[in-house]
Length: 138
Image (cartoon, rainbow, N blue to C red; front, side, top):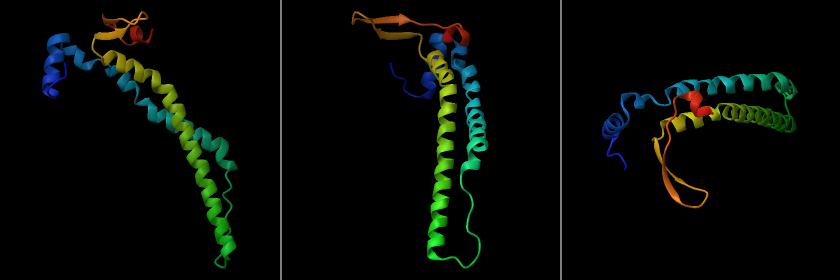
């Protein structure tokens, strides 16, 4: 049954599952803080490896023609696309590495009674309880 509000949800969870149920999934949630760190390290690695390949030479001087100015815009666009790709790849790396923690967190936080569809196509209510993060990861 849906909760009527946040306080109703807290009361129902404490009544049905106990006060510690409010903290289910807290350990993987704290470990998910590493997502930003993984992304930063991956981005810096990619920048070190491929950033030198990005052409950053610009025409310097005050007397530039329209062609030189257009060329400068194209260089900047090319540079931006390189950094955009490195940012996207670093996000994919971070998401791929931390996704299993997200799944564990979600499984720990879901209600212990779930409705499942069996292989025979029948609906069945089953009870799932995990002893902790390691048990859930198995």
